[in-house]
Image (cartoon, rainbow, N blue to C red; front, top):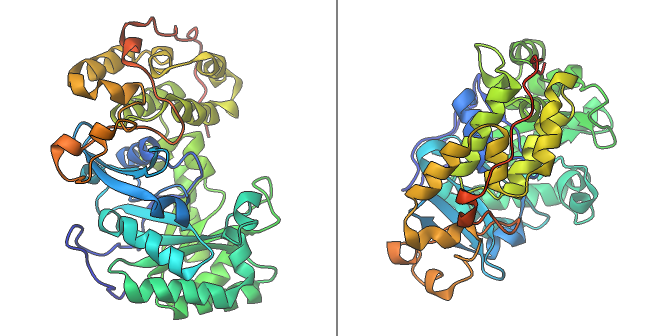
Length: 395
């Protein structure tokens, strides 16, 4: 592989050989799930897609209370993107949605020093993305794709990649992939479904194989990996360099463990702790937990109703019997950080200073899904966990 340059803050190039990655997922790919995936064995984690103009309109702020770097919206002071360098350095891919090379470059430069790779989303079939000329819409605009990737490659010090879907025919997919390769990208992510296909349709591993054999850059295959053994099966069948996992990892992130799946109860406990230390908004935490359990076997669905009733992070932690951990974490926060948990810290001009590198002007989270949980929740009675029943693992 070629080296496209190095940042003074992050050294080394991403290795795409024989790796397993957490795929980019809207809403799900926030800091807690990325941290949990890494804990369970993922080599690389992708952020959720962030629209270029949204990250351009942010301010970089060092957060000393969570040991994170936050990108806070200048308009409403919500956290658009958060990373924890101590855990994610060398493993983090920032995915953006874009349809313009100039705004793509501006967005990439905003986060370049704090991520390891810049990835362009060219596979999302959702209307909000396609209607803006982003995501899968780019599959039909090869000249624009060439301009975007070339602009990024020539002006960034970090590797550039993109993630695409299959086109109408294998020949069209290969032609498009070769055009992408000609721009000098470090790797290509490939979802084995066409734009009109949905998760219920089987992924076309055979077509991924054709693309992987036609390119000289690493191909990261995506589609229908639901257990650890599927990782090797996909790699062996397609000849891909690496594998990325989306739905399987959301249903049970312990999929990354070579030792086997953990119980849903243990996964929920581990995820809750990541949400607490990441200062994640309870709304996003709750949504992700509900995705984990909603399609599981009946014995695991006992969690769904209890999670659904939660109104705060204290409630959620109580559901999975992690309230003592939540309470201890909150109690350890300095008094000046209290506003972190009621969402007002970023709203205060006193804590949104002009110099984001000084501790006095470092701030805590105001999530893009407002508000968080209040510190008064520490003394609030947590939700009771659901009745214990026999466990059924997610497969």
